[in-house]
Length: 347
Image 1 (cartoon, rainbow, N blue to C red):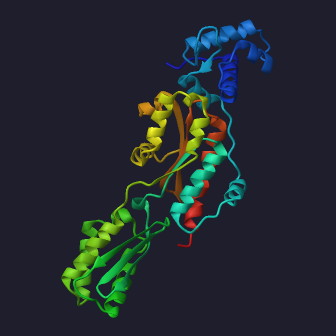
Image 2 (image 1 turned 180 degrees about the vertical axis):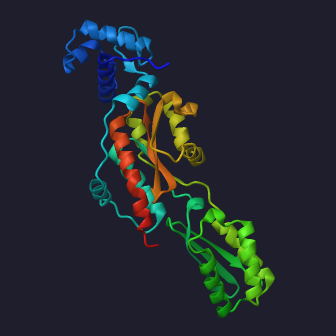
Image 3 (image 1 turned 30 degrees about the vertical axis):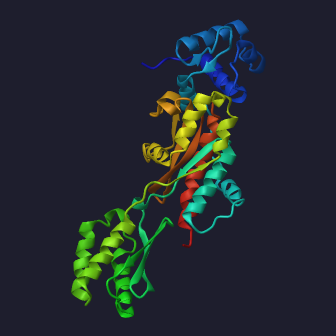
């Protein structure tokens, strides 16, 4: 059953959320009467606040205090009351211009995490493009010594994987050139998640019929190629972890330890990001978080894409007393431009 909240209660709830975000203090009826033109007395505002508390949208931290929003109150605010605006792409690009982006995804992701945290003054998190969702831009075999080859795989998302293969005998320059031409024809622009044993076995058989070369060496090359193409663990970059320390909610050492423990474990963060679908931007508030350690936090997460292909996640972690309009606008705007940055990389 959905609660009915009349217009006056909506305005009062919105004002309490906004005031609490700014002050981190319980908000009383006198403050609202002074700062907002509701056209009613403090006593009427107090009664409305009491009703909102009974409905679960507000909480009273201690007797004789004002009220603070509950998780339910923040949820209603985010879904029905707050106003947001996206940054124009030109404005985001101006911000990005302050950073030097080297031509590799790892540096770009690290810089974006720092920028997002600086813009929001909360902890930012961003995952690198997931290899399994990428296409092969280039795959090459390079001779590094008489019996050693280097496999280099570059994806359309800028990820570079490589591995050295030790052969039992040397292969000729002509054989190496043929291998590279063959792999270019068969594998270029192919999605990595289709590069499985079944597919590689088919083209391995085709190669054996065309090239006079040791079956053992060809099998070794294909086996190692499969390892290179296998998606690595999700890599997550953090920015602005120290901003957690600025939030009064985390003056409590136990609350702080819980959050820092999550931020300190990349595997847990990776699973947390992967738990969000690739749909529209998502705001998870307090006890809506699956992890108990995050019950004092809110998370705003968006998916970034190249074209219409979802590749990774970026977002912000902060207290439930988060400046939601600003964070949602910033995360949403940045998510729309990350894919463009990656797709324009040269190498």
